[in-house]
Image 1 (cartoon, rainbow, N blue to C red):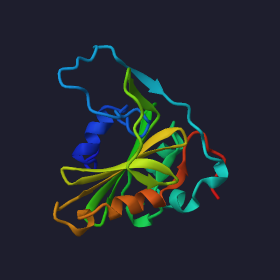
Image 2: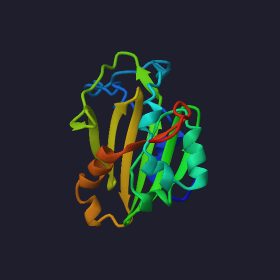
Image 3: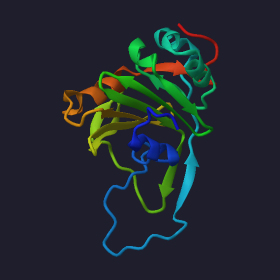
Image 4: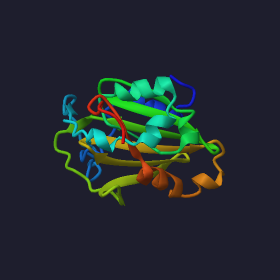
Length: 200
């Protein structure tokens, strides 16, 4: 795994069906004390991707990608969203698998990770949960864990997450959710196997 991946992102990548909340499969309430969960109570659900039109591929993003990263984006099985920041994209590493794609890049004193997955674990008896924030025209979740800010939501029939991990826990960029929200809102469509016709 590439050195740029945060330790939190690496754990997510190891389990590509991590995006329970963004796929409306997060628990709406905690399990009751002493409740037992059957060993086969969950199943892997793979969503149908709704591909954005090829004419919405952002040429700023495509043009800023290193050759290897651009090739991997073109072969992604899910629509890839990336921030239109050339300086960040110059360092991007893209990993693609049949069910998910992740991109990791260095920003000013931080690592930014954007992940998209078309798989989720659906647990029997667990209902949907509404997100705690509005983002990208939907409801999603913003959380902080061990100094890492995360935003997660659903778009294109796919579950997305953005993570921001600062090199120094005390860095101003990680003092609030401002950076993770800014990155989330500015993400642009970079392409994928369902959008090979070109960029605008």
